[in-house]
Image (cartoon, rainbow, N blue to C red; front, side, top):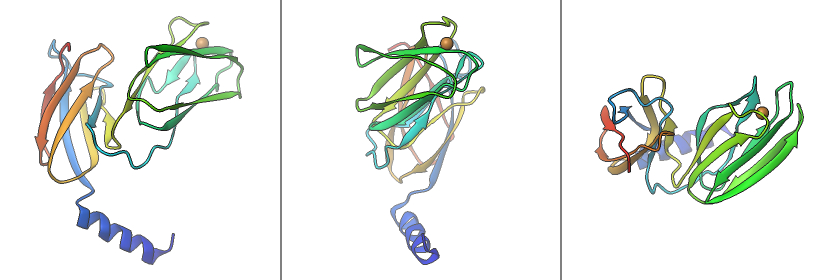
Length: 186
Ligand SMILES: [Cu+2]
């Protein structure tokens, strides 16, 4: 992209209020930090479904938790030294990507919001989650439950939280935070 076009786009971003940052911390109902919680602005229009990767290395899915906007194609490469068989539960159904070796890959497009629970039929210790969100403003908390959301438009937003324990949260936020959210059983 030409520099001139980039400057015009950046000016537009400022004008529309994109680029604000919202910070906060998520805890679970037991008061502990909610590590790997997905935090997103609910109902925020999805502009940019894209591609995401859930890697397989050292008998683990990496990342363990990810969030993607509706319409995103997720690629599942096997970069391990052994075969894995990826299957998942999603939208009340099961899909199976079969068994594939190092260097091979499969991909799936996710068109409905919801939880994708990933497993490997060979290694029962392998598990991961993808949350498909109706939003393109989302992130995942760090080990202390902290998060930083970029690209938050001005105004009041419904901020939602999902954690792999099944605990969820929802708060109305204005401004940049920091916000504290305690997730609970739905
Ligand atoms: Cu495996």
